[in-house]
Image 1 (tube, rainbow, N blue to C red):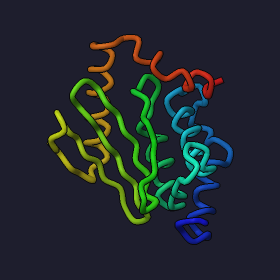
Image 2 (image 1 turned 120 degrees about the vertical axis):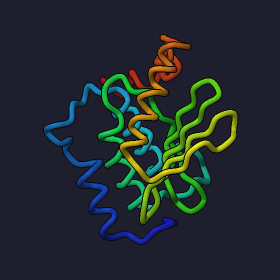
Image 3 (image 1 turned 135 degrees about the horizontal axis):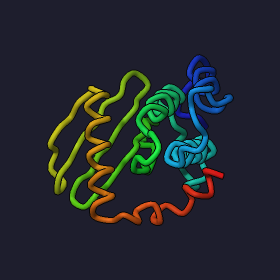
Image 4 (image 1 turned 60 degrees about the horizontal axis):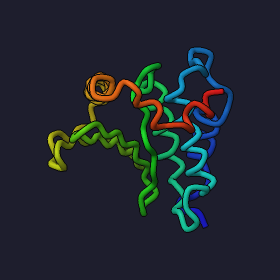
Length: 157
């Protein structure tokens, strides 16, 4: 059973996410293709037997934002759905954690250091800056971080 009504959100999701890739978007972006594959898993419920179905608007919103956030070379996210159907993208580097949450109505992000909340914001340009800084940090501490995501290479083919 779905946690959300079928309707406008599903049409938007199909157009933004599952439909043809926009001409300005390059499929060679491993991070986005990996995130897209994860979003498909969330919709299909393949990641957990008793998984909550994501809210279609939250899912469409996440796909929309990830298109611009995950430029080539960006640190790959791990995606999940909470009990309300909200979609979360997470990035972890050393003692930093970045969470980007999309709901039916909005989107916001939280930066944590050592588990303590540092910033909470709805400013997407700020999120881009933080994600860029986390990617640089990941490249510094583990230049082979992409090897931690073997499915990303498979999904980018």
